[in-house]
Image 1 (cartoon, each protein chain N blue to C red):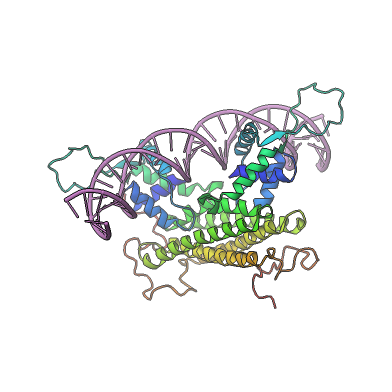
Image 2 (image 1 turned 120 degrees about the vertical axis):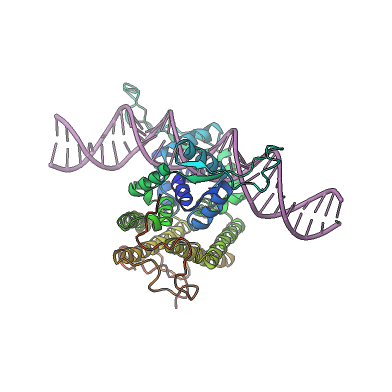
Amino acid sequence: MLEFAILGLLHESPMHGYELRKELAAKLGSIRAAISYGTLYPTLRRLQSAGYITEAGETPPTTPEVPALTSKRGRVVYKITAEGKERFADLIAQAGPETYDDAGFGIHFAFFARTDQATRLRILEGRRRKVEERRESMRDVLARAGERLDAYTLELQRHGLDACEREVRWLEELIVNERSGRQPSQEGREASQGETTRDGTGETSPHVQDERP
Amino acid sequence: MLEFAILGLLHESPMHGYELRKELAAKLGSIRAAISYGTLYPTLRRLQSAGYITEAGETPPTTPEVPALTSKRGRVVYKITAEGKERFADLIAQAGPETYDDAGFGIHFAFFARTDQATRLRILEGRRRKVEERRESMRDVLARAGERLDAYTLELQRHGLDACEREVRWLEELIVNERSGRQPSQEGREASQGETTRDGTGETSPHVQDERP
DNA sequence: TAAGCGATGTATCGAGCCGATACATCGACG
DNA sequence: CGTCGATGTATCGGCTCGATACATCGCTTA
């Protein structure tokens, strides 16, 4: 999973570990917490030994003289290889079942800009199917377990069900957009380019989504 | 994390592995997928060797005669011990930072019926704080990264931000309820069936929190 | 009748991932 | 002039998952 994200990021430009973590946090902030270094560095080494990425020598240090007095470690910049790009394309193409769980879907979605439309559609529909199943199962629990579960558990289920329904609607919208060849969020929303909402803290009209007059 | 959930469930009645998994799936269906056996069985053994649970001999098999011809494995029923109940209470009392991430909060919330009001409030507020932080960070990304990120990534952020805002509102509501001593979801909503609370076993009146050992 | 199938049930293994921890450099701020 | 936070690389123990294996039971169906 993380392999995919790293390849996707390095696809844009070479980076070192710390930078990767930050970019990842920004791009996937809505899905998962920042990735742990205990995951990142081993994965980088794994990818490197698999030949998907290589070390790209740091930009020439300002002083070529006095090179290694204290054997300074310095940052290690990685860049993607041709095999890495191929691997990334493969990972996009084969959408396994893990592509549809929360984390997997989020990561794939984050790299939709590098994914062809047919695959985008396939992934969106796969995700929708999965969320619908989850929703149905939760409806069942709520319907036939009014007495078995306590009030707090029920409240939790309700909140979860609500989130599911909302995500299905969101996916529906994206699918419709995708089919008609549009980019997301171009049609109804005010994009950020203008000033329109400069403050960002206040109102945040919750995600307009349908029927803008 | 799972330790907490298992102790919580066994607190209600003895169960065997398969049953635990199903109950867990029902109770936590809105938080996480069904738990893996590769997690469950090692955890059960860990809890057992720690003395928090013990094997409770299966209800006398229908045939006491012909006892063990094929050395049949049969199900292993576990029940919680006094130390286990103590441990569960401890885990409730000490709310670490992991209590506020998605999974941790969900599990704690699912057992709010066995949690005293002060702790409930503390956990709800801790969770709210965490979600608010997440929300702010996402607002930042959206505000100052209009061009750095592609349309799909932006859409993902928007959806995530929306979910955060919604959860904060949900938490606010729960906190208000909690402060006024009400049970969740009694006040505004149209319940699914007519008879308010017919509850059979748990009854979960607001300050239950412990039963006879 | 037997063959197959899905639910029930226990169990292990490799690999991914996390949190804690350690260590080192650098600019800023008091 | 010290120390604090950001930058930066790295390891370790332990939890968790998905895949896999195996066995029993009751039901349908050829």
